[in-house]
Image (cartoon, rainbow, N blue to C red; front, side, top):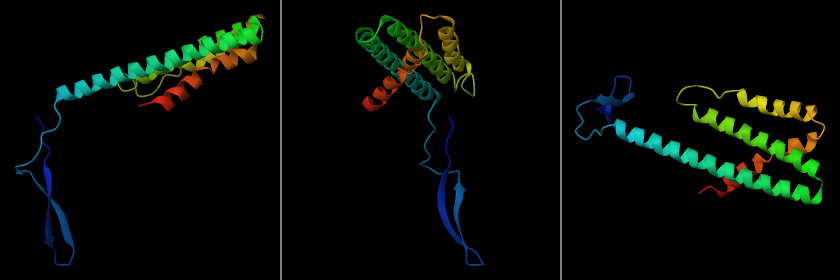
Length: 158
């Protein structure tokens, strides 16, 4: 068990009139032990479970927004635009999942977030340009449908 040494203030006047403010006292009787390893592991597990719950809520909000937007688009516009919106929204959810996975690994195995998720919008653009049934603007708007889910989660956080 590690113990934190307590700093006690001692006022010792010097010849120049300045004071030394603190000195290290290792024999302090009221020094408190540092958190033990078990409590650190438990707090890490609590953080991981809380992060997983946050991810799940954001994904659920994104799916709900996607379903609502695709339904409204299919009703008020045409099926081709709704399909483009759906494809873009699926790529947006994939982007969000890759980003969340990279952030989840941030402290454990890596020191920076992976850049692989940046390929998702590029792949969406190539997919839309390859198939004439898909339209670019609705696909890009669909890709951004995960943003309202993030905003709602931020506003509803406890």
